[in-house]
Length: 279
Length: 279
Image (cartoon, rainbow over all chains, first blue to last red; front, side, top):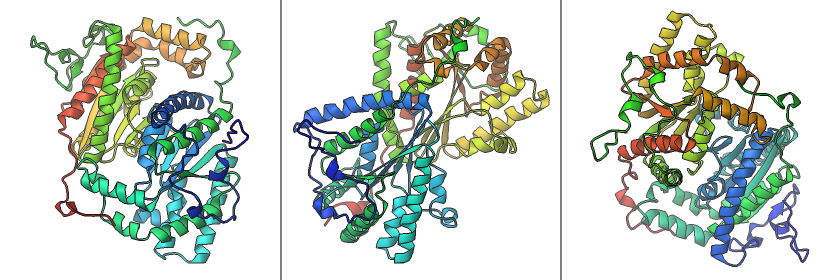
């Protein structure tokens, strides 16, 4: 996913973290930054459309190739733009071979199993792209903020997640994890918009305001989770997400570069098929 | 889905069947007909794009509305255009709330259950659109052609399918079933193209030629299945599919008209939300 600019500067370097244990301070990542912007919003919008079309072609090839599985994890607080990213970045792909899973609070049956039980059932098959809208990371964010698990349990879950993701990677899955990072001020504006706009009101839940009150606790929980689970095999990218357009550029580019790097190709042809005539 | 033209002629009438037991003769449906075409291919293509965009907006509303579930069944012989329909008609929708299931031969575990067991697990939830690429109808087509079930078992399966689909409809699911009807000649051309085009060869399987040899048996099996399962609650539409563009127009229009007829709207607003200010 590394993209060097002409001057040798890598615009991704700061935003991509892959060293487990290295401390992460979200305050040092400005949600309003636009490291990959052209400087012109209209150009950036066109770039997203172009990338979405290229991603459609790459997905078609990915499906035919069948050597890989791709898991895209989108995490972020309410209104950080997970749904919007899905629409803008994956929205041009054929529904064949692309699947999204919107994770919600676990059901009683799911709670009666380990926290990765329901997750494992939904990981991508060969040739498939699956996008998690929220994910198993909620299980080391929500219970940490609400004080429902001990520090030892939390650490154990981080390790279990790392082991689980390594299993996926070792068995042919590319795991891309994006943390959509918005500012407290931007969230206020977006929540207010949901309340004020009759076409967006259905997305608003009163509980969203309670979660917002725990802003600092969530920032801390994210910092700890990112630091503990940014591994070489499944790195995190922190995406400054106050600008929706730039957020889309960054995620689409990350996904595009990763898919390009796989050297996808159509399966080797069966030489017996040559000159075969259908009757 | 009925659309009357100015002269009172309903272009759908002949292609839509909803009377269980009435005999169906596929020979009387010309796969090359274009009952909904403008007469100009470029215009028809633009129409598909426009409809795909309208469907995207309707799906967004369908998801917010949450009163309905929508099951789209695509059946048809190899190369009849199931994948292409999915791409053209559903390809603009956000992956949120849209899911496709490509059914293949049942696994040993699936075979150890009744034939609707695996199907039931994949039906749409409230607000969701699910498209079956092949479906439970394979279970009254394949074993009939290969002689693996008795006539009595076949009749029992038809009745079980009708009961199952009525359950779905009575619990809020809209069931739309499209049979993509191609000519034997068109299939030959498309299979040959798959063999000759390196980018399409991966879609070809040698078994496809064995199935093609059973053409007449499959036409008969389809006629019987259509006649037995064309119910008022889950009618079939036979789609002439030799023209890909017209096939897309017909299915997109059918889906669009059905979704429009649901009177979708955003959920009723919570009056307590008015004047709520986010802090």
